[in-house]
Image 1 (cartoon, helix red, strand yellow):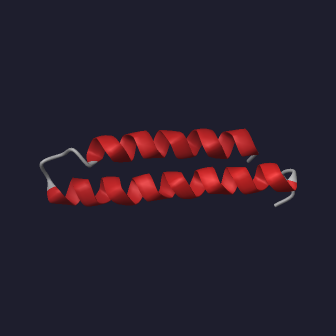
Image 2: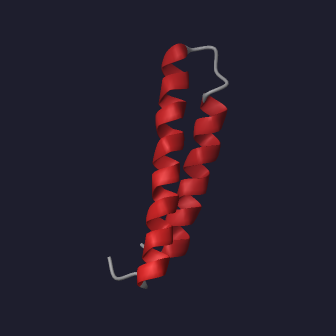
Length: 56
């Protein structure tokens, strides 16, 4: 995947994770926190790919 794709997926995961964090269910809130962190990691991966020219 390219830089843009990773960043877009990361943003989507962060938004969904944020929504899940507002749930009344503790399990869903924990899942939301994890999903938000995955989104941040995807965005960082996209930034790295952009800096390296999609060679990873």
